[in-house]
Amino acid sequence: MGPALCLVSAACFGAMAIFGKLAYDAGVSPAALLLVRFSLAAALLGTVLLLRPGLRRAEPGPQRGAPAGLGRVLAIAIALGAVGYAAQASLFFSALQLMDASLLSLILYTYPVLVTVAAVLLGWDRLTPGRSAALLAASGGTLLVLLGAGGLSFHPLGALLAFGSAITYTVYILVADTVVHRLPPVVLSALVMTGAAGTLGARAVFTGGVDLGFRSSGWFWLACIALVSTVLAMLAFFAGLKRTGPSTAAIMSTFEPVVTTALAALALGETLTPAQLVGGVLVLSSVAVLQVRPARTGKQDQGRRPAHPDRTAHEALAPARDGLGEPTAVAP
Image (tube, rainbow, N blue to C red; front, side, top):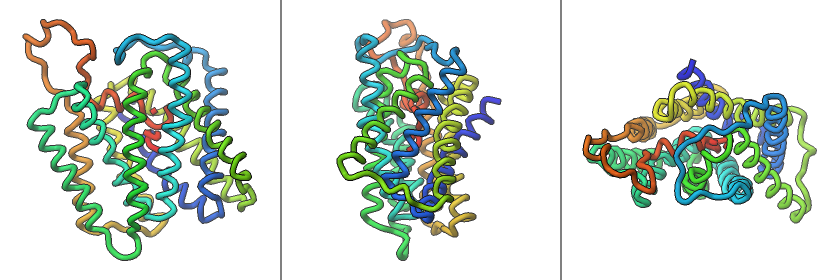
């Protein structure tokens, strides 16, 4: 069941960009989409926590840095949504207005590679020859994805916003990694959603509100984004993560852009050029390679445990998936 749940989660996350495109066609603005999504998701997650008290219990795990008090952890969790996730989602859905969902998905999915690079620079991970080759392949794949774009489907500003979303999500994951083991996953997700809803609600107040006068079909697609691509996706991811562990869960998450590309072709008539398909395969293959944890030597195992536990980037990525996220928790 574990791998199946991870695939269900990836499929739900992968459908979000398609739901977003269909919502735009129904007259929904990005501001309305984001506000309704996060508000509805926060309410639903709060209801789940009321009905399932067992989800409020945290399991012990490794932590980054010095232990923090509960008040500070709660503040960081809310700030993750209010600043990080709200910004990431805003960039993602702004890019979605300008470019194809399939291309956006491939650009966004450079974030696991960015997490790996950041983890190495911060001393949280090690750069092996295999990972170096994977990073080079991912870089080449990203170039193919961009250079292979042709016609009017490619928008430079959209690509810039998409990369901004990936970078923001990388920072979000690294910060979330400092508190992800201090709070139960669903509690952390509810706090993140609440923080994001608060920021977007405040923005709506200061900008004169959001237009909710779109067609009824728009509400249906918004409900799909909140229910399927946020709450269900996040709960399935955590259930799968618990049964498979972070490595398998992170590798299974590479199914997400595949789902987006397939659904975009079926529902929206989008296509990728052969060069972009090759680039996408390179990026996703590199992500899978980067999940493989380097083996420890016996001497390392006997040595003193470092202040920052040696954890690979996917172990930071997996618990922080969308909904914890975009991303955990993942994807946008």
